[in-house]
Image (cartoon, rainbow, N blue to C red; front, side):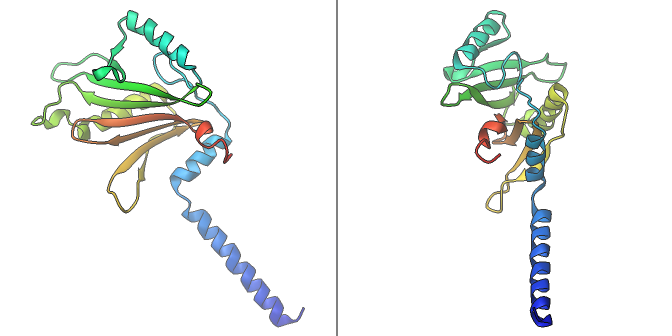
Length: 199
């Protein structure tokens, strides 16, 4: 190989290596977090109350029936979800209502829990109990429940100013976002199901 061809090849390899390095640097904090947590092969299936990823549909309903009979939960609005009141309201505060309902795989195992949170004392003219003030309270509550990695802010792109708050520990991902003045929407998802064909 003459020297000119050798220099061209070396420069091409240098450019390729630089582009690969640049692509690695441009990988988002979220992508790096998901890869790291899934590669750890640590499983966090516990959600809240006694519900867990992998519960079969009949188990979800039997657990719910027991907790309903104990007064922990009740049927949510319009019979579309389950209602759980989080903690006791302190003086001058308002209790938080969490609504939840699962999604199941084709094999009938729970892999997503859809959530929504709102202050019971919310009123359109009362900023104190709006979703902007609720979001940090929910983040702190979930950190107390689960520990582990902190929430990170993830932008949903240029077309929207909306942001997600995401917490990933092992296979369990928790996302939160404000959807209106009253409500913070959440989701708990088993990433080992979501990315099972990409692992």
